[in-house]
Every structure is written in structure tokens, then in C-alpha cells.
Amino acid sequence: MTWVNLFGSKWRLVLSALFICIIISELACCHKDAQEERKSSGKKVKPEKPKQAKAIKKGHRAVKTKPKVKAPTQTQNLLTQVINRLKFIKVEETISVHAGHTLELRCRGKPVQWGLPSYLEEEDEGRLRIVQHERYSVLTLVNSTGADTGEYTCFPMFCEDTDCRRSHDNAAKVFVFFPDPQELFVPSSDYYEVIQLRTNWPTRLPCQVTSPAANVTLHREFPPVEVTVDGTEISFNVKKGFTIHRPRPSHAGALYCVASLGGLRQSSTKYMLIYVNYPMAPPAPVIQANSTSLAAGDNLRVSCTVIGERNVAVELTWEYPGQKIGRPLYTLESINPVGGGAARQQIQSILLVDEVRDVDQGAYTCTAENLQGSKSVSTTVKVLPKTKPSKP
Figure 1 (tube, rainbow, N blue to C red):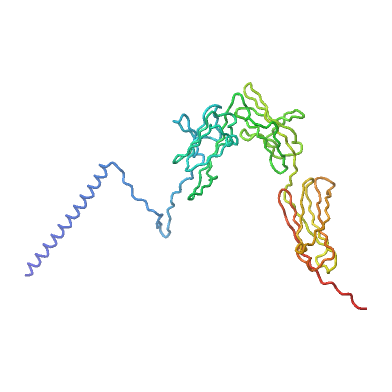
Figure 2 (figure 1 turned 135 degrees about the horizontal axis):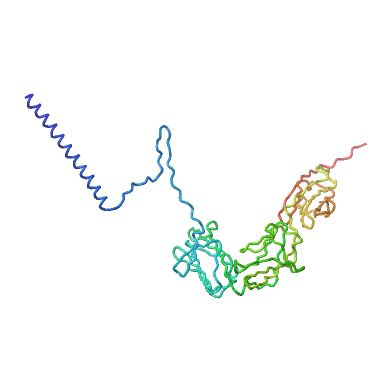
């Protein structure tokens, strides 16, 4: 009985080992078949990427893998020029298209809005066509002229439901010249153009040429002389014209530009420059009362004073407690030079309130305003009961 049990146990072990060998063999065959199938298909099998970055333990520290960030799309890549409907070239800051030829620009986006030179915005001759496709917009300008010279901008629109607005951050721009053998300057209907010279703001004389190759100089009509362009006080940019960076009274007068290219020489529109002394900053008023505590029946004087530039207008206005009951405003105004009559002046307004009463108690506010802005200052006045004379 013992021998039979021992023999049966050994037989069961042999069968178990044989069964395990069969299973291992089958798994090896399946793995080999899978490898052959991948080789026969000729495709590389990539492991799936995890959807989220996982922390990898390294010693006692956890190191997080950084997700890859897409580089932002350059806005200028949105805009291309179409050549013969078969070739697309990336536009630079400026391009030239000979007058009479066709300009075709393509901008990626759905939808797209275009910004155009002012002449084309008013033009109604059917030369301009804009077509919106599913993923891009095409601007086509035929029978072009020198007057079409200017900046062309495509604005990809940002839409929420039916509400769309321009995306200025993603706008792409190109300045297009249309060289015309007969017109060196962009035509203008005005013989004279009046431009203000502001003391606090650069002044620009457009003098826009149709060809970037033209040589442009600046001239004064009287006395007839060429104006020095040093790049600091006055500079020139072929897309913008001449800029006077720090206008002064000596820059005022009639100026014009002269362009020359090849054997052609032409003059531009005349620009009448008028000097306007603009304030450098908002006024800084100072307020003062003859007393901040008065007895009923006394007279009140509140002054508001501003020191500013000569020939720069400053308006002073008042708010006072008596307005609530309709008390009329009485003021004394004066303007006087300061500092030896140089370039400074004092503007002053004095508010007069005779025989103050309880209703005159409160805040008195003076507001000074010029072209740059306004500032207000206040002072508080207290009205005390009238003291009765003591009996002898």
C-alpha cells in the first residue's frame, strides 16, 4: 500500500511538470508569432504615452517629467503672397508690386478681417475683392496704382457664438509699395495739409513714396532751404516719412518733400506746421483759506493757485457748500508771469464768501484742468456760532 501511494505521487509530479512545459512552449510560440506579424506589417509599434506626467522615484526624491510645450505660432506665418496662383511665398515687413500688377495675399484663419490703406477703404471701383474660405481668406487687388501703397493687415477673428472681435495680438502686417514710373509720391487731393507741432508729442510728415528705392529729402518753402535730417532731431523712415521728435517753434512754417529716382524728380504735398504749446503734465493746484475756522458773519477767502507754462491755458472750477442753497459764485481771477517773465506763469482764482453762515461750512474743492488732464484739491472750513458781546 505504501509502495502504490509512493508510485502514484511520483506519477502526479511527472504529469504536472509536463503540463507546465506545454504551457511555456505555447506562450513562446505566441510571442514568436506576434514578432513575425509585426515584422511582416513593416510598421513600428510605439508604446502608448501616458496622458499625464508621472512622478518617477529616484532614491528618496520624486522627479516629475515635464510635458512638452508647443512653440507659439509666429503671427507673420499667417500671411503669404500668392504668385501666379501656384507659388506661395512668406511676406517680409515690406514687399513691392509694380503698379498695374495684381496683389494677392492669403491669411490663415476663420474668419479673417482685413485692415487696408485709407484710399482703398474709400475706393469703390471693384478692383478689390476679399473671399473667405473655410480655413483662410484671400485678398485680391487688380489694376493696382501708386495710391494703393500702404500697410495691409490681417486680423484673425476670435468668435464666441455669434460675437466676433479682432485679435490684435495675432495680427500679421505687411507694407506694400506699388512703384509707379510716373508717380514717386502717393497722390493726394490736398495741396496743403495743416499739421500741429505739439511740444509733448512727435510730429510726422507722411511724404509717402511709392517706391522704397526713391531718395527723399525735406525742404522749407521760405526761406528756400533743405532741412537737415540728422536721425536724432528729425529722422526718416521709408514707410512713415519724416518725424520731428522734439518739435520747437523754429520748426513751424511751410515744408515739403522732394523725391528723386532715376531721372525723375517730384515734390510732395506742402505741410503747414503750426506750433502749439501743449502742457507737459496735468496742473498741480494749491488751495488755501484765510482761515479754516470762522465765526458766523465773518468773510471767507479761499485761493487756488497753479504754476504752469506760459501760453498754456488752465481752467479753474469750484465746488463749495453754498451751491446747495443757490449761493452765487464770486471769484477774482489773475494770471501773472513768474521767474522773471521766462516760460512760467501763475494762474490764481480766489473764491469770496461774505458773511459766512452755517450752510457755508464744509469742503471747498478747486479743480485745475489743462489739455493733459485735471487735478483737484480741497480744504475744509468750519463755521462757529457768533459770540455774543459781554455785558459791561
